[in-house]
Length: 282
Image 1: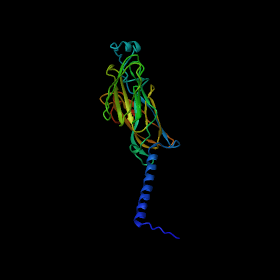
Image 2: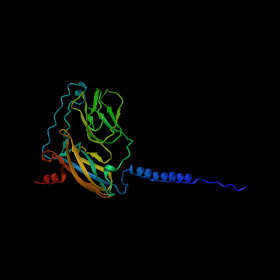
Image 3: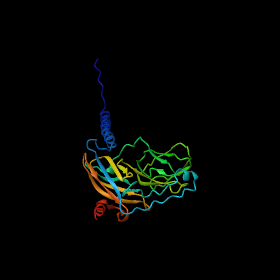
Image 4: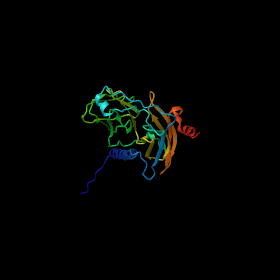
């Protein structure tokens, strides 16, 4: 006996709508997954390299009176200020980063998203000072705070965009962990028990940043080809001093971007190209 099934047209129409909706959702998820990488293919990525100079005679590094803490006096008796660490005319502890820009594919850097690194960034308290003085990390990346000194310290970040907090860390205590949910350049960190102790944390959505070393050198790798605003930040004043420069990164290319601070070079938003021209004069 032949049995026939009659499916209402309304049922078929509803099923068709559900299938269409499902198909339209899938590509959206795949695009999001691709966008979260935010990185150029290894074959196309470029690099930014440069040197930070200091113009003129740098301020004298002053010896710090640590007598209020006998451990600090014994641990680091020759402790001096670190706001201007200059060696042979080169400036350390300058935070260099891409502020924004357009990739070769026409995408704004600020519109791209990047995976949160699984590795921790460490801020240590050693010799009664923060080490390193300046560091960078990504939004929501974990900051690991340690105390290598045989004395008690205090960690007190004072951000503007993120929540402020204040915690004591005794000698021998386990590491403290924190993260910043919002980008901020830069977050000051102080120790309420040792007022000379300072550090600065640059928090960005992307990984394109570096800190100049003892020779003033920095390098940012893995940069997608494009045109960007590069910023060099150095501590000083209420919010620090900035230099900016427009750069173009070619596929597989390396662009040089040097900056200078000190004396007349310290002008907020002053292009470094003009500073370099002044340096070459006799």
